[in-house]
Amino acid sequence: MSDAAKQLIGTAMTSASVPKPFAAYAPSNIALSKYWGKRDHARNLPLNSSLSISLADWGSHTQVSPSDDGQDHVTLGGKELALDTPFAAKALRFADLFRTHAASAPLRIDTNNTIPTAAGLASSASGFAALTRAICGCFGLTETLSEAQMSLIARLGSGSATRSFWHGFVRWDKGTREDGADSFAHPLDLNWPEFRIAILPVDVGPKSQSSRDGMNHTVVTSPLFNSWPDQAEADCAAIESAIKEQDFETLGPLVEANALAMHATMQAARPALTYLTSESWTLLERLWRARQDGLRAFATMDAGANIKLIFLKQAATDVMEIFPQAQMIDPFSKP
Ligand code: ADP
Ligand code: DP6
Ligand code: CO
Image 1 (cartoon, rainbow, N blue to C red):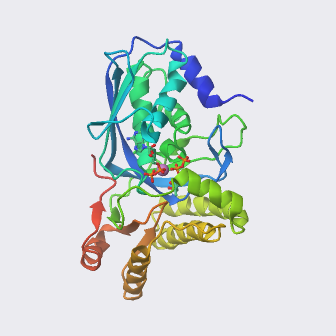
Image 2: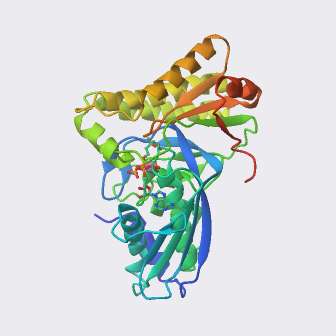
Image 3: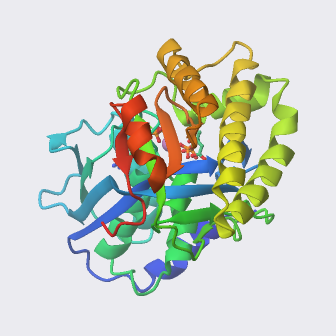
């Protein structure tokens, strides 16, 4: 069976030009309705659709250029990485999807994350979206490929990267085709200027288990996983309508419940998996107490210990008072 993303690259690369340096930026994103579980590992196809909000200027800056010494190079935050580190190897394996069609040009990949790497703040999302844009630019494909097509290609690097090609709210349709031709993201065409996100940092160091490994372990061993795909699909649809209606009172509880259900599937995995620490739970308890006192903010958590809050502008002062460590993001301000 073919892979639609690889076919798309093959067709596009027939119009590739001589590689030239190209720099790109992609925002990270936080799923309000989570992607958790794959139906196809090779093509990185999800079991359920997901919906996210992009994080404005929190993301990845990546430049891809022809290498001038005949060797591949990968730098992260200005530091050269050995080519056999998992980070460099993954980035180069992704570049190889293009290079099989282009006389194996040695490349230099220089990337810089304005978010912590591998800490559950979706660096794989901004990282592979920025890398896809930069490789496409380097080979002169930005006119040939649409953003939707780049989203489909970036999926091969990381699923959440499909959602990092646009600002604002973005939905990744799981698709139903076996070759993955209909599994890519599109932006929800709406502006919600009052919408705010706050990151409550708990642990910004790299996690001990990647999202991919944690997800796969949960799918294979958790007896609670069976109910996840249908529930997640229903949550995604309900979350999308609440966003379209700008109905925060419906949206907030759905988003928090969806995240907690995902974490419940991990807790039931054998052996159990938890990315949340006692500090994460302390913050959640503080949030729940504050909600009883009237605060309108809700939490979401990914494969990492950090807590993310969503709320509207009018709650911002209260959020800052209760969580002075909060790092506020205004996702609809133009970065
Ligand atoms: P996160 O929660 O940060 O997305 P993951 O476990 O999903 O954590 O993915 C982390 C991996 O994403 C890194 O180990 C690396 O392989 C990849 N990654 C992160 N940032 C970049 C980047 N700027 N360019 C290329 N790959 C990246
Ligand atoms: C919990 O996109 O990092 O953040 O496709 O294997 O690279 P791979 O996984 P990744 O998983 C993200 C999981 C999540 C939820 C989400 O972002 O939707
Ligand atoms: Co990730």
